[in-house]
Every structure is written in C-alpha cells, then in structure tokens.
Length: 620
Image (cartoon, rainbow, N blue to C red; front, side, top):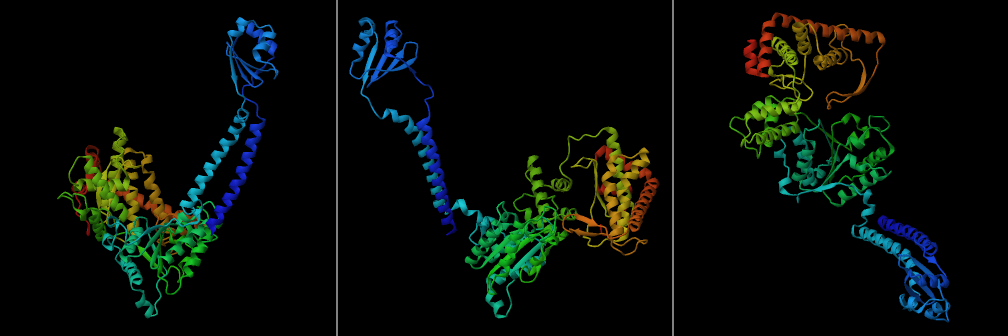
C-alpha cells in the first residue's frame, strides 16, 4: 500500500513537472527567432543583382522568393500574387540573357514547412520526458517498488539451502568450548522447542556474543545457523542507520516481520554497539535521535516476541560497556557469552584448521607456533597461516616450512620488513646495543618471560625488537613481575647511556610504555605502599580494545595527584637502577651480544642462551 501511494505521488508530481516543461518549450518555440535570420530584399534589388551576374538561382514557393547568391548568401523577397516572376523581372529591366543564366525553381506552397521548427522544439522534449517516465514506471513496477525500498532491511539470508562450500559447522570453530556449549543449546531450542515449553521453560530471546576483535563471534553465529538448519538473517548494526529520519526503525520492523514470516529463524546483528550505545551519553562518535529511535524499535521488537515464538536474536560486540542497560536486561539479551582469546591448545587447533589445503613441510611444528603466539586471536592465526603460504609461494617453494611460519609471526606482530630503511653503521651499532640491553636484563631477572628472538631488522615503525613470549598462559600478574618488566623496558635506554654516554629517540616508545605501567601500578592495581590499596580516577575502560580509555575523571585532590607522580617516578628510578646494575656487571656479555647482532642482525633463542650462559627458566 505504501509503495502504491508513493508511485501515485510520483506520477502526479512527474506529470505536473512535465506540463510545465512542455509549456515553456512551446512558448520558446513560438517566440524564438531563427539562429541565422535571412536578409530581406525587394524585387528591384534582386533585378539589379541579376544584371550584375551575382544571382545563382531563385526558388519560388507561392509568393515567396528565396534568392541564392554565388557568394553563398541568401535573400528573401515577396512578389505580387497576380504576376509571373519572369515577366516581373523583365519589366524591372532584367535582360533575357541574364534571366536565362539564373536557375528558376517553382515549388508548390506547403503549410507544414512553417510548423517544422516549432514542432521540433515541442516534440523532442515531449518524447524525451515520456521515455524517462516510462523507464521509471517500468523500474518501479518490475522491481516491486525498488525506488522506495530504502525502508527495507538489508539483511542477508543464509540457511540450510546454502552452498556446501560455505557451510560452517562447530567443528570449524576451534576452542571456545564453553561458548559452543551455550550456543548449541540455542540450536536445540530451535530444533526441539516443545520439550522446553512443556517444562515451562522460555526460549532465550537474545544471545549476546562478547569478545575481542577476531575471536570468532561472527564465525560462531554462522555455525549456529548451519547447525540449526533454519533461515538466518544477518545484518550489521551500521546498515540500519541512514541520512533519512525514521529509516532505521522501519528497517528494524521489516527485519523482524520477515523473520516471523519465516517461522523458526535466527536474526544476527553484528557490531551491535553501532546502534545500541547507551542513550543520552556523549560517547565518541556521538549519539543522535535516529540511532536512539532505531534502538527503541529493537527493544520494542524483542519485548514483543510471544512466549512460543521461535525467533532468536544473536548479536555480537567488542564494546559491551557502551551498550544501553535496557538491551542487557533479562527478556531481551538473556544470555551473554564471553569469547576469550585462545590459549595455547586452542591456538594449535585453530592453526590446524587454517592449515587445511596448505601443503606443510615435515619441518613445520604447529605446536611451537602456538607457543610463540600468545595473545593472538583466531583472525591473527588465520592471517599468519595465509602469510606463510604467500611467502612460500613467493619463493617458488612447494611446501610451507617452519621458516615461513616463524617469519609470518613477526610480520603479523610488527609488520613487513622495511628493506628500504637502511641504518647507517652508527645507527646499527646503537640499535644493536639497545636491543641487547633489553634481552640481557630480561635474561638476568627472575620474573620475566624467556627471550625468543632479538633482531635489528626494521619492521613496521620499530627499528629493532626483542621478542619475549611466555610458554604458559597468564591471567594474573604480580607486583614483582611488573617491576621486572619496568627494568627490561629501561634496559635499552640504560645500555645506550652506558656505552655511548648519550641517549637517542629510539627509547621513546619504551619510556612511554614504562610510564604507563608504573602509573597503572599506582592508580589501578593498588601496589603502592605509600598510597595503599586505593583505585584513583574514574574511567570508562574497555578491556577488549588494548586497554584504551574514553577518558578519566579525577576523583582525588591535587595533593594526592602529586603523591601519585612521586610514586610513579620512584618506581621508574628503581627500575633504572636495577637495569644499570645488571648492565654494568655484565658489560662484556652485553658487548658480545651486540657484536653478534651487528654481524647476523637476528639471534634466535638457542644462540642467545648460549651467549649469556643461562639455563632455561622453569616452565619455559
């Protein structure tokens, strides 16, 4: 009905515009002058021009004469109706010989010729606008109102009838054991709703998948769709918002109505935070009435489900702290499933999945790769395997070896090698001692992770790097671990001061990271003896996006702020003394590591441990 009204309004407006344009065209055609106006002449002037031999021909049409001159010009004259042209010219003194040299053509007068110009001006616009109207009408009719479908949801439909090549099952989702158990229960709800209804249980109306980017939220939702064998409507949160007010809520209504018509179905909304931010708060990116109207419509639709309804909403976000509380209450998103970063066993299983179809060499050890990639998400591991295959193909190899896998870890972590970034001899020496300082301090302390690799090859924005990776996953960190980490970060800075009696800008990132850790020790973790177990500062903290904050509101006095600064400086000075003591005590080893780095540019774990003469740390 809405489309029919829209089409009727379009037709009415179009005809009005067409009528106006035709009127303007007709007036222009009637009153417009020719582009080149012909010269008017008298019969006496024409007779004179004939005697002078300038006239080439005369066309007679009724009483109108069109005279063509030999120089290309034309003139128009009118003769008397009763007399013939030849006799008239002879009477005006034209000689017979000159008259015979002129071509005389007699045409029957036609009334149509004077209307050809005006009709051309009228008919051409008329035909053009009728063609445009016909095309628009045809498109609107054949496309079922495509010109007005911006209120329709742009959801993509997936289901059991989808291509088998694109089917994703729970076997394709490695790790996430608890999450898979939760969503498999949702699948059972859809397949066998009666057994739950008989027990008086309500089917969950919404499932919220929460996790860091790349942890498999969308992949898990696709697996649910294929395992359940029901229509699966997928849309991104940003697709609901347009420049027109009211479009978002219209699309939400259309999406839920379509899902209800399909019967048992799943609605998946990716990036829910795009439309689900808390109302009334000025988060970065801003909230406006259109987004809030869209959110209100989602709340209404989810609350409007009947008890026996068999539609489930699954949503995914990596910013759960910005969502409106009304979305998270029971009756809407009843279940919140946390998707953590994979541990070492899960990473190995994910690597095996992404290794399918890639010819691995006998030397490839996926377990070692899993151990060297803590903190990698599933998407990172997929990228790692893809980069290793690309690297092997670039080198014209037939298999992917361990070398390509290890190289891909560095590429995913830090970016590709900057081969064009060539260091001078002095810069290379400074970088070598800087990285050797990090590695030596780390190897000399008890509460640090083992050094896996040292390199002075530029990658990304780093001139060199020291890779320290734990073998076992850590979920808690102690104060002693933080203090040792501060000493390691300042190891490169102190190595430069010790060897070159100067420091460079290469330590700026280390100092920034160390300052951040020291401030969090004091303000967030309550590890300062002077200030005690108190958290200072109120913030909207996002635990999923690398610890970024929206900003901090100071809830302490200026005197306490001064004490915080003193404690931060104290921790950093203590770490500086520890690093300086180790490097002075082991200066010969520092120089030995730096010399090997300058020669080879890269030192792996085994060679490094031989250089420093340390035993493997417990659990390493």
